[in-house]
Image (cartoon, rainbow, N blue to C red; front, side, top):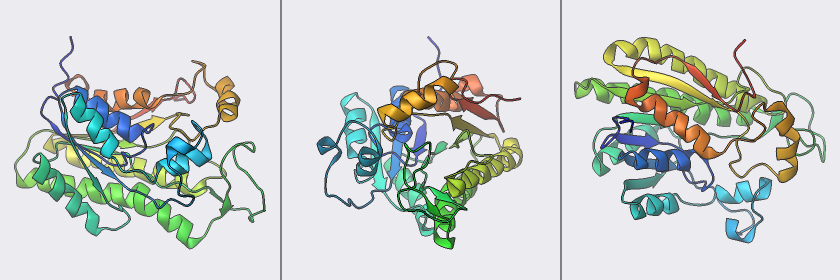
Length: 292
């Protein structure tokens, strides 16, 4: 049996309220290793007033409804399995939240030793003029609109700025307590180098990757490893069955990803087994994208 060295480590995971999401799966995976997990989430307001139980199993409508949930269901699952978890809701677009997140995690379990930046904002936008009824991803994805200052800033505030600020605060508290071991894993996406129809989302993830590499160089001498997990198409509830079938031919392993596929990679990068890995981007997408 492999010992990951994660027992009793304090892990903070952002973006953990979607029951089918990567954040929730990651929290469960760390808890299964005996880590104490602090789950951040952001609960949006319901537009339709319907919970996920009253909507189909997956697709855009279900995914939007899932964002209205708390992360208490994840906490309850972990505790029922004998693990330790707490959850806290906050908007990472507010810089003041950064300090509060670490304060609350420390109050619950102690200093954060593993930081997983998974929270993301994604609303499809484009350089093209908006057109009524226009749909992205071959007519099977969410509606898109022309980029605005607001759409740009919303993406970068959460997907890159919050990651940078959380990383800096992690390092600050790490040095203050004279720690010698830390892990930061940032969740990107396999089209971060540039992708149509969701231009601000993908660009902000590319910035996240740049921050990650710089952090790996600067924080490595302190004993902090920083790596990136870049998921391919993962069924977190947003893909309809039709969209799943559409993307399958581009995946050599011929299945879409599951949240647990990404969570396992994240746990690996935090584990003792990855002790000499830093500054790396790991594609986890069934071969959907490969290094050239």
